[in-house]
Image 1 (cartoon, rainbow, N blue to C red):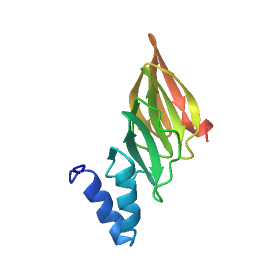
Image 2 (tube, helix red, strand yellow):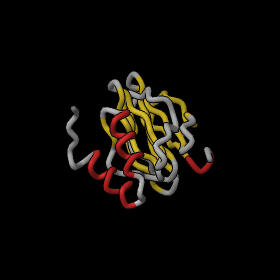
Image 3 (spheres, one colour):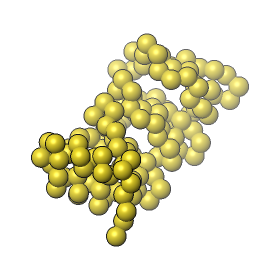
Amino acid sequence: KRMHTMTSGDLLLQVLRKRKDNELGEEILSRYEWVDCVFCDDRARVLLNDKNGFIDTGGREICPIKYDEADFFYNGFAGVCIDGKWGFINKDGEEICPLIYDEIIHPFQDGVTVARLGEKLCVIDFRELK
């Protein structure tokens, strides 16, 4: 039997119990190795077979569980990484910015972020990607 820490499953269960969705919480926890305790933009990060993905508040996967690393959602977007290359997905799980960047340098501010591509710094304007 798996053990859950207060920083993951128990907090998810507490949230879902308030919504009277205890069975959904138990089912979500049994499906994944780890579930983020915080829903950002109504999305939570999950881990399965050492890969990251996201679920919505109903427990539905919004994208394939395939990313080596993933950031939380902020203003409708999340940074995701495969084989050391970063890009972004939207709340529907669509890769709206290709996974080509070596590093995400600056967090979102006013719809813009900065990423490193080789020796170049790139400004990504998410206002144009919506």
